[in-house]
Amino acid sequence: MAAVAGAASSQDQLPKRIRQWVTGQDGLDRLRIEEVDLPEPGEDEVLVEVRAVSLNYRDTEVAMGLYNHHSSVSHPPAIVPCSDMCGTVVSCGPVTDSNSPFKNPAFRLQVGDRVISTFAPTHLSGQVQASDVAQGLGGPEPGVFTQYRVFPTYGVVKIPEYLSHEEASCLPIAAMTAWMSLNCMRPKGEIIGTSGAKEVILCQGTGGVSIAGLQIANAAGADVIVTSSSDKKLEKASKMGAKETVNYKTTPDWDAEVLNRTSNKGADIIFELGGAQTLRKSFECVSFGGLIACIGYLSGKQDDDGDRTNTNLLALKRNVTLKGILNGPRDELERMLVFYKEKEIRPVVDRVFKFDEGKEAIKYLFSGGHFGKVVVKIKE
Ligand SMILES: NC(=O)c1ccc[n+]([C@@H]2O[C@H](COP(=O)([O-])OP(=O)(O)OC[C@H]3O[C@@H](n4cnc5c(N)ncnc54)[C@H](OP(=O)(O)O)[C@@H]3O)[C@@H](O)[C@H]2O)c1
Image 1 (tube, rainbow, N blue to C red):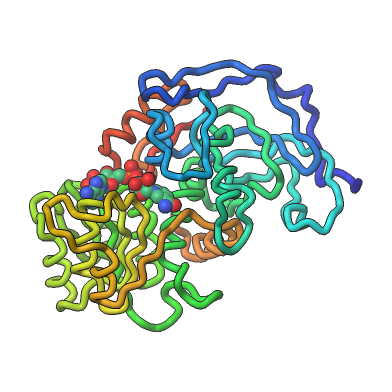
Image 2 (image 1 turned 60 degrees about the vertical axis):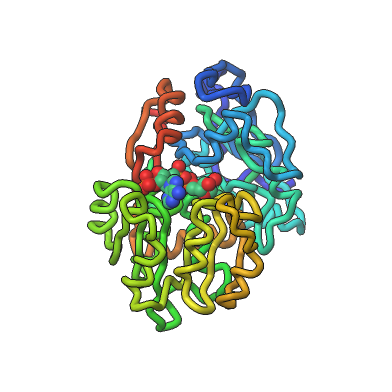
């Protein structure tokens, strides 16, 4: 066993009991706070004081017992929800030596390091596997909506100084999924904006994933089109650099509008978030050879309007690759942080709630009134 990395703080200076939110996966109204003992880090683990938690659509599904589309994931009846946090390392367990990729010396941490969680901690690189999904935080594994949590050192990543805790907490799922949607089909090493071609990116709606996509694509010099049900939100998106905006409620044929605005070329990458009601339209306004990043839920192989045309045929029509996005690995998160730092991208935080307002925060996200991310400040 090697020496402890950095000064391990004394657990004595920390509270003995901590508070955390718990869901029985039986409805947003039944979220509750419970008190538990402070956990202690074991070998190659760190104790993190959580400073901010950002909320994802998935968290509302877990709390309502509706997150059941991954067959490898079975949920315990009651669970601490949420996967995305930023916090400070307050104590380090002993460091062990080994050749395991999970014990990479580059992952070692010190007390005082500011870190974010990764959604599926064992997903270090490459293709995600069912076994990684089965380790997802906030379902099935205990989540981060708590004051203190132990993480394996490979399950957190240090963040750049320029980001606040609230901003950094928005990165693990929303920004990471946007990053993967923009870069996962490029040759390894190449990222958006480096090929010289001017790309058009279509972001559906103005939630966490879409707005992170707008920021990354904009910083990389791409043209971004944002759709929304709200003109007010579209104004905000324009101010942030969206080249075109379309209200999908007042312009139900938004796909035709996307073609209009792109001289009939269509969008090179589409963030497909709407699923059943948007996928067909995405196929109509994607560029030839373009990419539909299937991020939201593709519900049904047949359309409910009686048209039996299936997805395979629609994909063939424009020679399109259909690529499912399931978050991304740790090494891509690190590449993304380098890009964020270089471009000084600050995640968009719509509203910050207090710890005791956790239930209101999740209900606010579920209402869809937000633009960007909803965050809960765990420590004032
Ligand atoms: N595969 C993955 O790894 C992954 C990762 C993250 C999220 N997701 C999924 O991606 C989706 C979005 O997640 P999120 O966290 O960004 O959600 P979110 O922050 O709650 O965003 C919701 C927003 O989506 C927009 N929207 C809803 N219905 C729409 C429609 N029919 N057409 C266009 N936009 C629509 C609305 O924007 P306006 O108010 O502007 O209309 C709404 O405010 C969810 O289905 C989530 O489960 C998947």
